[in-house]
Amino acid sequence: MSGTTTAAAGLRRRAAGAGANRWVVLVVLCVSLLLVALDATVLHVAVPAVTEDLKPGAIALLWIVDVYPLVCASLLILFGTLGDRVGRRRILLLGYALFGVASALAAAASSAEVLILARALLGVGGAMIMPATLSILRQVFPDRRERALAIGVWSAVAAVGAAVGPLLGGFLLEHFWWGSVFLVNIPLMLVSLPVGRLLLPESKGERNGPWDVVGALAAAAGLFGLVLGVKRLGGGEPAASPYTLVPLLLGVLLLVAFVRRQRRRPHPLVDLRMFARPAFSTAVGCIVLAMLALVGLELIAAQYLQLVLGLSPLQTGLRLLPLTIAAMAAGLAGARLLRRFGPRRTVCFGFCLTAVAVLMLTPMGGHDNTGLLLSGFVLLGFGLETTLFGAYESMLSEAPARQAGGAAAIGETSYQLGAGIGIALLGSVMNAAYAPGLTAVPGVPAPAAAAAGHSLGEAYEVAGRLGGPAGAALRRAAKDSFVHGLHVTLLVSVGLLLLGAAMALRLPRAMQCEPAPVELPAPRGAERARVSA
Image (cartoon, rainbow, N blue to C red; front, top):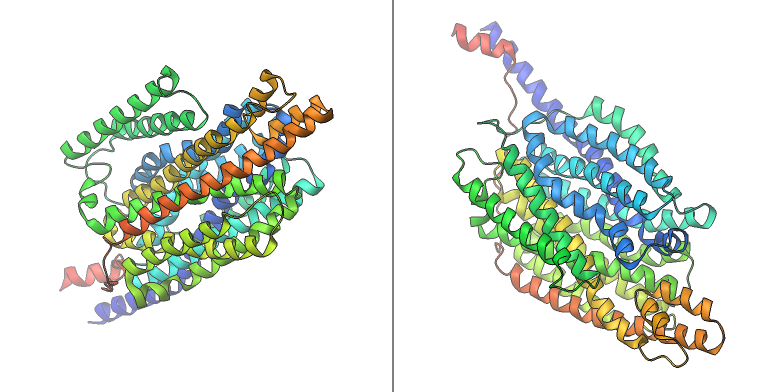
């Protein structure tokens, strides 16, 4: 009797401790997310400086920006499922270390090739970190109400990283060289490693059967080939080119083989039956469409503010700040919105509000309009974050807790895949609308016009070399063509957002809250008491 009472008291103390510690765990996970979100946006304001210093071509510049989400998206399933096997905290801490090393390499890069390699290693580190944060969060917050609040805080921190990234990058570029934007990761890593080791609980998923190494590699290679092919299309490569067609076909074939392999295996890496749930598959599609619109628009907006309006990097970061502050507000208010209106209306409202914001921004031209940009960016940030929050919460809640690693990997893969394809897709739309305006500028030779058609930054360089009336005419034509391309890109984004709003109608109308108890291992005293009984 005494042993049973002691064991029950110990179990109550452990439950109380878990209730207190899960919020500390959330803080540590948010710091992990901040590390990744900061690196995803800090480079945006540095693109013109990188272009001026390293002189990358159009394809190399796309690689510098896009290789991080490309590699990250390719490896999320691999590291997400590996974390289920060997421990999510272990993978998370290894990701911290790699992130720090890759950041130092990127800061010291002296060529476009070295910077691309460093950004690829950062993508590997991000693939280790991102699914671990979501899967641990899913495990330590089994109650949906608390989990919605936790995801809201988590998404608000992502917005903080997006806000601090351009602002910090602009500040550093005002005082240091462009490589300094990567050095900010190192102090965060030095703090996160010991703190994460001390405070984060180890978390593992199901370990039935062997880990499917072949399947993980097939998924990684398939995603890499798919996004690589799309990226080359975004860089202006012809669709019939073997360098574009071969990666696309191989990527699709490998992903089809991966799906068929997972369906046959008794213990698959990812339980694809989750996609049979309409709420899960719809939420994943909404994440992809939201990122298609967000990342490409942010990159183009940063170039517009600097190259068309002539703002400094720091001023650019300040102009983008309202967007991410509004996103922070949406993340913090998301749990209340979801409880009151349900997933369907919340996500649909987010998409529609974002589409309205993008339409508001279409009058942007060659002259500054502070009020228009401020109102448009605020609505854009609130709408997109509302969409992403509702979609993530629905996706994680639809997945069983025992499959948290696989669900988190799918969610983060869709996030990064959407980001990578968004840059390529909107970049290709931008290039297709921009380049024709430079083909017949008076006094500009054809080779110079062709070089200027690669990007606005390159057009300014060509105009500077030409000088005189021809250089001035090329500069004006390039600015006008960029603004025209921006308008076309915004209209395409509106179409994607309205498609997402229609897709969100398949989500559940109400938020089903069924509290699940925290699963705690029984103390050894309790086990002995049960045996003796």
